[in-house]
Length: 550
Image (cartoon, rainbow, N blue to C red; front, side):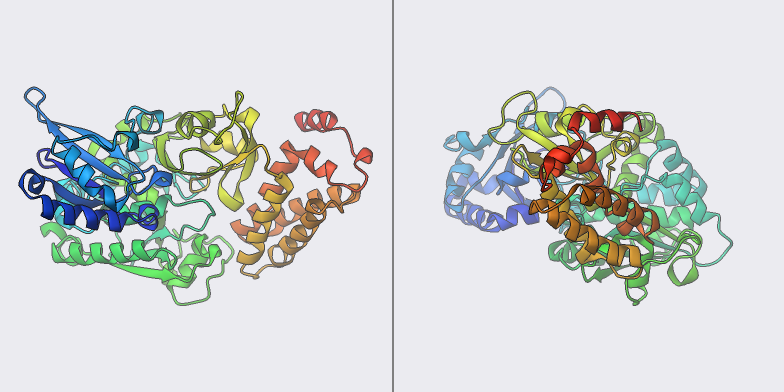
């Protein structure tokens, strides 16, 4: 249980705010408190994780206890873009002796905050990520203890199935079904793996959870291990996340010291060893078979499936792989019940989804909303649209979902609900949760080329369609960006996209053409205008008519 409300300043210590000078702000607050003494000494200065509005850092939340009937209440104020020299002003506000920072105080009723529903992120910005005692005070590991004492593995899996949770790594495979597949394999060793190899451009959801609430992830992974009968697990993180790796390793040491990992966890007969494996940053290692090869010390390249990792994964044993957001949802599902979680979202996409909102948008940061929320609500109501944007679309031209594997959705389709099937029908995908907003001046052929160059650089080279096909696609896109293309090039571009997607070995190559195909589908006129003889191209209205009859 969380302790009673107290006067405190919660200082964001996640990467976004740290890059803006958050550590200097916290050091200045500690120094100012020592100098002021008196009432200021009663103000707790607490390091926490992400406070969500990453584009306005450094962020500090002020919690002020207020009497409210029988239950103590706390009023929170959030301050943005703070500087070290404002430490005395912030402490003055905390002790009721001034309000010099009113202009930097954010409106807590703004849709950016009010429309979010915290499940995965409920501890982010609240818990000290480097203190297991603080995590325990906020209820972390309570569900692990509970399931070890009161639940069978089958009962745990049943709650996950009832929740309707689908994998948040992009594919959307039913989590409970995957757990059953691993658990019901023939007797023998099993492994659990957390895929924290978040490599999509514009994605920082998993990093924020690792940096802000690592004990929540460990608890979810331990529950998953118990549910499928595994006694060894790994968290695979990319080396570009040094703060996340540091805090995760610290959290693992703390959990072992508290008897929450290792032999006989919480006095039960369940044993679990967890290790961190740091990847070198290869995007293809986000693909599960390449990730497993990397953990085993081999080159991170994918292999054909079947067999799937749930049948034959690490060292040939059944292996459960889930991503950070999926596993971080598990403790809440067990605490509130699978039916509670299933009541959130849509019929086919249950629960909430965390998005990293970035690009040409007023409010950049982490957003967690119920599935089924429209893209317009996320981009315009919550994100504020493009800075200075006008009109019904607030300057938005398109939204990229799903990273290099996703597609560009035009502004006139922003009323589409965020769920797996709806996004797939538009030629995009949910992906891990990166959501990049593009303004009206954005060149869509250039966007397609940007993502294709990314795929060229990240291809492992194992299969020819991806190794050679992405290079040829990037070269063809050069023709359109440089306005040297012909009508024949337009036809060849589409043909090559479909060939690469249909014949590549893994998801990287199969999905690499998606940004090209989606921009051709919705912004074909920009490719036509880039031809040497645009008058020879089919009118755009005719293209739309043809698209509607496919």
